[in-house]
Image 1 (tube, helix red, strand yellow):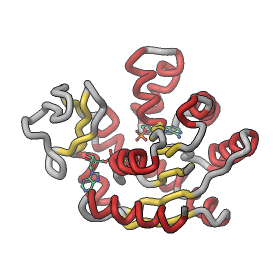
Image 2: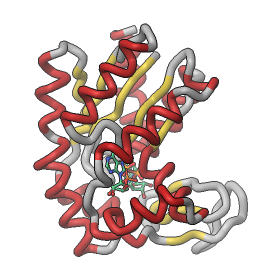
Image 3: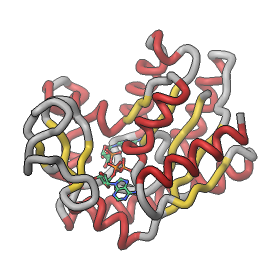
Length: 216
Ligand code: ADP
Ligand code: AMP
């Protein structure tokens, strides 16, 4: 299974990616997570990406494409993968198609998570991430047992710097301007499946896995 999850920031892509990854035994590759790791370890790529991320802008396509291409060459992605947060522009999608063709494979399905904008704002404003294991929590919708401490690994939780309201507004604009055109792009390829991503996490997981099973 080779699939892409598309949706606005805060739609629940990372949350659902975990379940799809477990069900299909494929790595969930999030460009946001990869960029944050580069920033945290201070690599050249991280230094180049950071100013775009903190402003809620997209990192330039060349930088992003090279990082994803290297990741797709790793062994665990040979038999399938889930991409979360990539592609995010039509040029990224075109290069992805070219690169997969060179590898003799293709995308099976692109899932669009559809969520109301006021709901993504609620989800983003309460999002907290574990420093230790990277797990994503929410202060109201998916709280930890002890405030600020990860249930899974005991790590400390933090709020992403780009989850502040001013940056979130820009990220949503960027999504509608630069990423939403991918819906038509993949619709024209006959690969698009739209899933209603409003409601509880487990109900959305069921809808997603059912939609994927119908395509497989
Ligand atoms: P994305 O990867 O699309 O940016 P996340 O998976 O990080 O989104 O989810 C954003 C926030 O919303 C997180 O705090 C997560 O715990 C929470 N969340 C995810 N799915 C739901 C849901 N169905 N209902 C309520 N909160 C959710
Ligand atoms: P995310 O974790 O998906 O919300 O991504 C966080 C930030 O990383 C984005 O706001 C961008 O600055 C950057 N980023 C992630 N994926 C991409 C991408 N495909 N293209 C360009 N920038 C990206």
